[in-house]
Image (cartoon, rainbow, N blue to C red; front, side, top):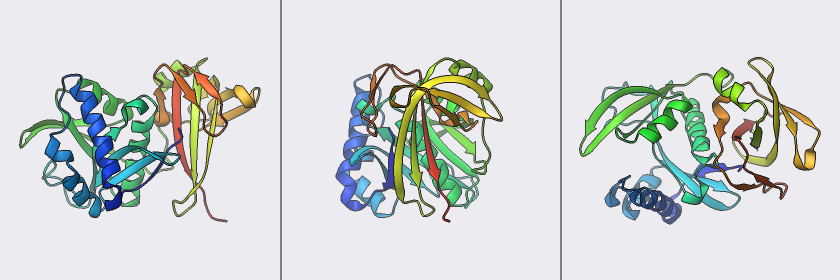
Amino acid sequence: MPFTLRPASPSDTAQVASILGAAAARMAARGQTLWLPEEIATQRVAADSAIGQYYLAFEDERAVGTMRFQLEDPDFWPEVAAGSSAYVHRVAVLPQFAGRGLSHFLLDEACRLAREAGREWLRLDTASDRTALRGVYERYGFVFHSVANVGRHHVARYELRLQPSEELVFDTRIAQEMLGKTLLVGVTFLNSTGEFIRNEQFWGTVLSVDDTDGIELRLDGMSAGDTRWLPPDTRAIERAQPGNYRLRTTGEDVENPDFLATWTVTTRDN
């Protein structure tokens, strides 16, 4: 953390294919087939990148995650009215970045891209027997739509109705679990045209949560003793995997935080 996103060009094909391949190999080691080799072959990725469907997520200058974003999907959602939805496929992160909030960041960015395209819904699918991944999508806010057979795929289809960006979602259960716990925060600032401005990282203990005032965080580390208030929006919050987290903006190490939060803030021009 924090991460940035940009469209993948044909020259990025090798990086996209490498991330997809690493994610597929990780699942294969667990006895699960994520994608067939031909679905993530270099030629297929290059063709999709050429029409602007793939995006790459970066930490600093390193490509660490990818997703395929589409504005139409007649194969998996043939009944959906044209122009109403956006679709996300092939969400993948490098195995060493699992549990770092990167998948959540990619879904956040897919929501942003869908809103910018004027779409009311973001839709996706996953293999119906992948209960853990289905749980990830459901916790994010996706709602189960239906099961469908598409070629060799037996998939569970999910949809998320996109709220205007100024509307917030506050999950009281998650908020209460955060009280007294350590929260690691990464914020990416963009200008009004989507260009990167800066990253900011900080961490501390959650002192209070409120659906109006937001999340009160008492900072630790280099900013120990300061207080920060975060928006009353729990969509950006997820449980952290155990481990050591290095804050690239400060050089601090945070050991076993309880929760991660990733926000992207778009500033307004003066």
